[in-house]
Image 1 (cartoon, helix red, strand yellow):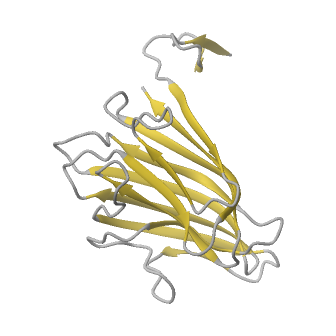
Image 2 (cartoon, rainbow, N blue to C red):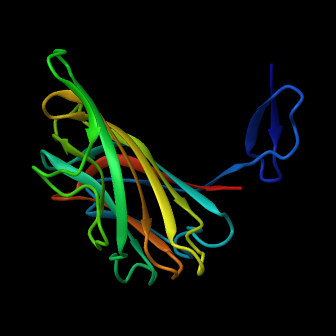
Length: 211
């Protein structure tokens, strides 16, 4: 049996019976819907965005991100100067899993993108790729999450984790999982999403704070 409890902001939290104390909360902050958007940015203190020490963890969900251009990458970068520059130094590692629609191919492996883009970063200011190779067919898209931990810290580097599922142009089902850190002790106060080429044709990105 599950109980539902409302926190002081009216957000529902579920728990198993008998455990109703010490609940964390997922607080909705902002939703942005893409419409031929070159970028989507979340900047602390701008347009109702909160990305400061209010929460120690922030969660972005991206749903049915559809590119205007075929075979491109969906990606993000971070800023420490309120979005004037998105060029924070990052180091990351990740894996991919895929399975073809016809069942002819499947794999699970570390993914450095040797034959394409560099997906694992090594002290790089480049974007971090979330998923890649999605065509702009009407039914192609990708969805997933990005977690950023304590971005406002001025003591520690900023860790992040990503998990994305998308329909690859091969065609195949593909999943990317990446983890990394922004190697800075400056507060990260902005996150920007984009495609490697062309606009974000459609999709929505939501930001939540985690208590």
